[in-house]
Image 1 (tube, rainbow, N blue to C red):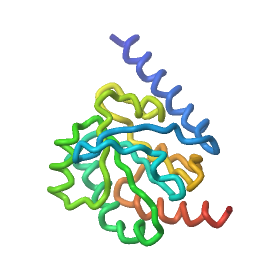
Image 2 (cartoon, one colour):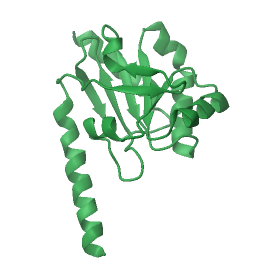
Image 3 (cartoon, helix red, strand yellow):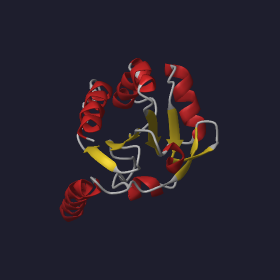
Image 4 (cartoon, rainbow, N blue to C red):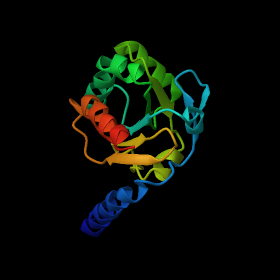
Length: 168
């Protein structure tokens, strides 16, 4: 049993180190169903900044704080034409209930096959790993948050995008 736990821990460390390889590379395109069962493709948002955030589970304490942070700052994202896409393994039905319960004004995507989480090195065994990718208007990943403070994450993203946009 200890050997299995050690192996899982080691794999987690390796996966965590790989995320840095995404920066300054094209974001892998994907298509997933949103909360209404409508297909959403990342490439549809070319020309805009896109926040792709992976989170473990709808309607859990940390995930709710993170989502409500995006909700509370959503007007600031909208004013800057920044798209927010949340991704978890939950179904479109679960996402719809989560959105309704907390009045979330952004899109949640259902990665039920865990394939997009795998593309983005965010695949966990039971839940997606909490990570956020900032994708610039040309479709390039400019920043990756591997550690997230769910209470201040949305505000930190707005500041980081402003910094990155100023560099261009």
